[in-house]
Structures are given as structure tokens and as C-alpha cells.
Length: 106
Image 1 (cartoon, rainbow, N blue to C red):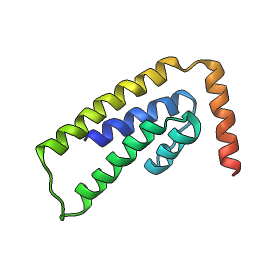
Image 2: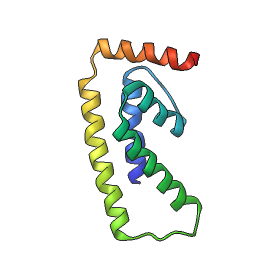
Image 3: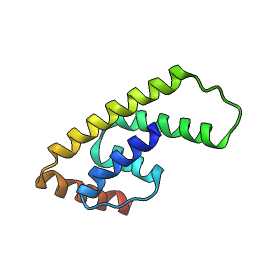
């Protein structure tokens, strides 16, 4: 659930800029390419790998500490994404849309 908190908060600034991406990996790539948030990209990428491992495979150890650590990361990620959304201005939204066009051409 920590991962989904991160993923859903990631979709918010994308929607705010007029971008709809229903692909999880694609959304994470857009976070890096359009918003240049390396630290947030690394955090959500780790959380996604953890979610896939725990959801689809049985050979893992789940500890309270690992769950608590990921929950803390999700809370911090959510706060940082709220700041990204809060600070988005029309000029930045237009700039992000321009970057998206360049990304889509490559």
C-alpha cells in the first residue's frame, strides 16, 4: 500500500499538467524526465520493485522494520509531491508540456 500511496501522489502533478499516464513505469520515467526529481524517482522505483516482489513472488522475508521503513518513505514522498503540486505555476506547466513533446519525439 505504501507504493500505491506514492504512485497515486505521482499521478497528481501529471494530471495537473494535463498528462494522463496509466502505466506505472511510464509515470515514473515522466517524473524523472519532466520534473527532474532524481531522489523521488529512486524512492518510488525502489517501492515498485518491493511491491512486485512481495505481490508476485513467495521467496521473500517481510519484516515489520521493512514495512515501517517503506511506510515512512511513502509519507515523505507524499509530502514532497504535495509541494511539487503546490509550486506548479502556469509557466512551469507550459514548460513541462513542452518537455513532454520533446520526450515523445525521441
